[in-house]
Amino acid sequence: MSKIIDGKELAKKVRLELKDEVEKLKKDENIHPKLAVIMVGSDPASQIYVRNKSKACDEIGIEFEEFLLDENTTQKELLDLIDKLNENEKVNGILLQSPIPKNLDINEAFRRISPEKDVDGFNPVNVGKLTLGQKGFVSCTPFGVIKMLEEYNIDIEGKNAVVLGRSNIVGKPMSQCLLNKNATVTICHSKTKNINDITKNADIIVAAIGKKEFVKGDMVKEGAVVIDVGINRGEDGKLKGDVDFEEVSKKASYITPVPGGVGPMTIAMLMTNVVKAAKDQNK
Ligand code: NAP
Image 1 (tube, rainbow, N blue to C red):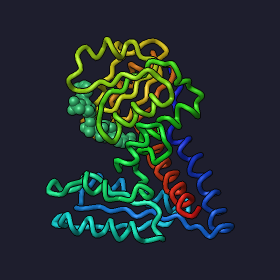
Image 2: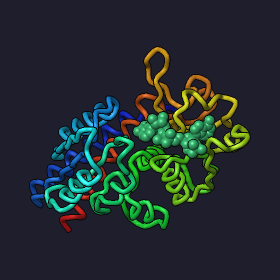
Image 3: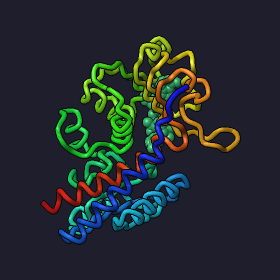
Image 4: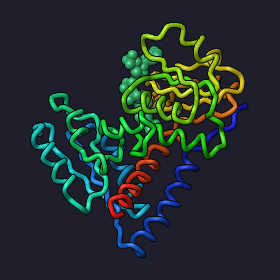
């Protein structure tokens, strides 16, 4: 049976450490970290994500301001708001909640967020820094996965790591993070042939494809570490990952559950990035 990587517990620990740090920053250095979140439209899932981020900020003592723009917002209005937040010295982190309406260019918006305030790590400057192995903001989900592996003392160096999915927000930065930690990385996507043959050789599998219980027991090597990023709704309404937990947990040495695995870590790492932004901007 696998050991469970408890993302909920670890995220709690990270948040408590941040709370202490924020208290000290306020008291000793008059630094008051602040996150601004922009949401365009009223996507129900996004509303939940934004609420969770706001709750985490409250708990840690990070100031939080939400900017709700309606669906008819123009690209210029969105960029003007980003410009204003870039210039506002009280705002340390800016997050544009995706998705945004299709008529808007999200990539241009990500480019417009100042790299110093880009706590989601989606600005090409930060993506480039990650690729070059330089310090910058790392996208929160991959950052959280690496933190989990490190906290559980799981070796990454020299391991065969297989990342399922190549999205800009998870798969690609995840692969880069693992490569930066000296893993030998293979990326699989929807055009990859014989995925089973590839995953069966993996010491570490990170599944981020958005297909419910895609990774089955026979795709996993005995003793592999399996990280499940996927969030899918089952027919019963319950959350399911990209990994068939029941089958895979019989073979993996470590596994993350869904819920309670990568999800809570993503928010904890966002909070970490906001505090880092506040400190860097006040140097
Ligand atoms: P995405 O943008 O839809 O990307 C999915 C990726 O999976 C694509 O690269 C796609 O390949 C690949 N793929 C799809 N079907 C496949 C298949 N049958 N075999 C192999 N590869 C396949 O999704 P995402 O934004 O990266 O998110 C992935 C999952 O993670 C979703 O369930 C999402 O909800 C979840 N997520 C969780 C968190 C968290 O905090 N826990 C954060 C972000 C996302 P192509 O490129 O060829 O299309």
